Image (cartoon, rainbow, N blue to C red; front, side, top):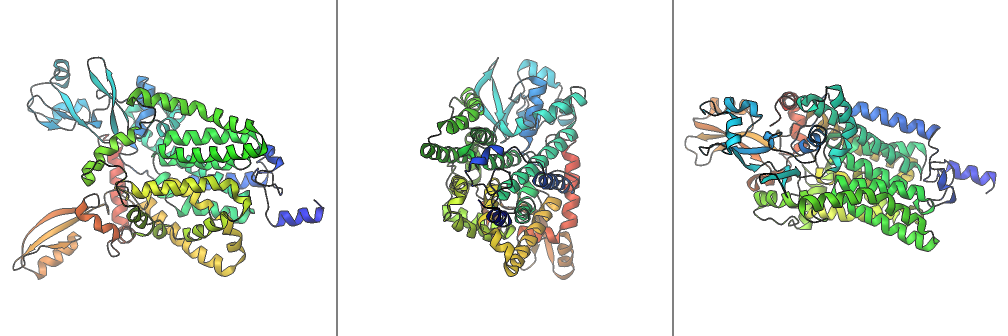
Length: 574
């Protein structure tokens, strides 16, 4: 290539996916230079990472929730007990207990036994020794396995699998040592440590999104794509705020996709890709769709180029995590293809819908809900994604984007799975949490159209307005979302003389106004839980939508969030 053409290509941003900065084809011969990430590109990536870690911690707290609880406690039980299961003796708050007289109680700690049942003449130790105290049920976030401890005691493990919790093991080991080998007694360190790790992982995923975009375009548009992902999607208020499955999964998916670029020409990139995608599967089982799609793609590329070593590297690197996960599932559930989330999900599905079927939602309903509903729709919470939908069309018409084809196909299947899941709305959550794991892929769909947007003032202005709204909405959730607030909105049901139907008011202030103007006969507190079928219509309400609720009740929600965080780190049963 002549110097003139080379400079022209560099100005056009035709950088390869290898991080070399030159006009390298997506599967080009210079892929072996992928490790050279220093220089301007590395500096930009470092700045993105540090800024995002700071932004993710700017709200001063973490997002509490039971879904994260087993992930936070898994490294603790591994460090303190040497196993991956949750013993009722160590974690009583994960279970429901019954006394010898048949009274059902929830124990926080066994030290609280006398406070919980002050009239009982027994101590916990006496009851346990005689076998007269037993748990009759357990929380949904632990699942009973086919294994039993000596004495017939059933063994329970994390409903959400071992991956997310094990990512915290290095950090929690350091904390465990810092607290004298007793991390389990320092819940603030555990929960804030989990938040810190989640923030780091999501910031790291944004770096990989930037580097992937930089493989196809220049620095400015690539930074814009990374910022849109990191601040304009649910990874900010959800994935980065506590140790869900989402943060680690987002990180490994974004990492694997970056290394997928150029993997057909470099066995080292293929190996890193396989390792990352297999780690994602350990965090969230549905990520196997991405791993399989990438494997098929590499198999085709290797067949065409006659480079079987690339596919071999991908499989060998993925094998250790895959084998460990197969052993885990087989040991605890009796099958390599049985996952705790599917086992526990049947009971939750029965409770919420009356049917144990996991994929029972009509796909059109789930799609409409997770894309357009006022309180769960992706295009409501992140409307800039309309440009990503346009990018999807362009991506499949140009050969240079071929390395992104497999993850795009996998994304479509992942969306279909989420659309058909029994609670497509994701229970108590903020925005479209059920599809937050697809956000790295969704945002990468901007790559084919980002240069077109960047060069046109009108298009860039529209994109900026939509992105600004998206960032505002996600920031609102990061600072104000308080779990109960909108999802289980407190109401007051008021009986008025002369009316057959009660009047529902939203606040104490409204109730006091009603008292001054109407003959009130009685009132009682109620709540509108979106998990209850009777109140699920709220997911579609324009007037009673989640975003408007947190705008109107921002300070109240912030105060509630702070109080709940204080209780969460002092009372493990919360």
